[in-house]
Image (cartoon, rainbow, N blue to C red):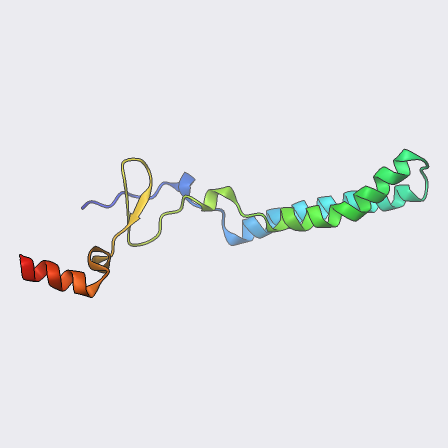
Amino acid sequence: MARQAGNITTLPRSPDDDRRLRMIKYTVTMCIRLVCIALCLVVQGWWLVACIAGAVILPYVAVVLANAVDSKTVGVERPGTIARIEGQSESVHPEAEHADPTQAEQQSSTS
């Protein structure tokens, strides 16, 4: 079977680039939180409630965004896989044909 060359657009981001992007997302979100905290000292009424909510909720949002998995990593092919026509991958293991050793003996004895 001929193996197809990998396409550069199907490769995931490098770990350094991924880490840098996640840190940028976290930093921006936490800077917005600092603005909300500063505004709590100045504003009144419903704006105060909105600023307090932002100061309380944004740390959770920042962590979720920073830990979000890149969607490009889902379609990466692993060694030992072959691509199907539909674009899915199927693992190639000789043991997968006969998962149960008793079935393999029965099949070989009946042949």
